[in-house]
Image 1 (cartoon, rainbow, N blue to C red):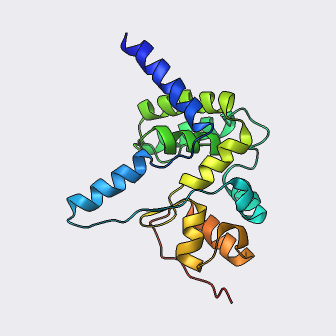
Image 2: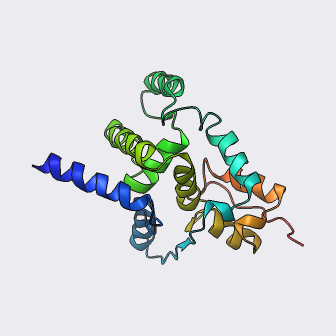
Image 3: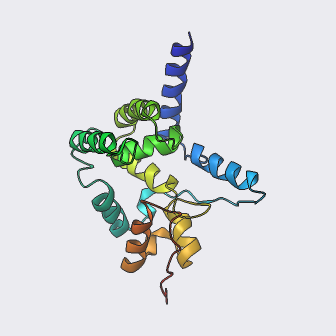
Length: 197
């Protein structure tokens, strides 16, 4: 019974998000909770935009940096997953995931960021669903709108506004490169804001 409820509700969520903007993710909730537990107030910055309102240069740069074979695979890069598995075995803990943009999108929207094999199983399930129901352009659109890009900053449009005072459509090449470099570790280093004049 619980399995049937999960399958029906998960498919319903995937179908709804095929059309509706994703306004809140598990990671956003986690970041708010972490700030609250530290006695801080975190204001989330998250502005949804159509992929048509994001710089094509930025879209291309993200694909090149994060998943060069995005349009060729069905959601999974098996070579990268095998490499990550053996690397994790050597290290004795999970240090790599070998995730595609599709997997990262599934994780960001439907899962927590916990580095466990259980989460990876749920991520794989949702990856298969979004590949089936969404298609590549929608996956990319959702990914670019929900990725964490700084403290309380989620999505390309919010990053463009917060760091450069512009929209994602008008980002310059250096600004694009700066944002793309942030994706692997958005809380690791402060942004160097380029002159937008």
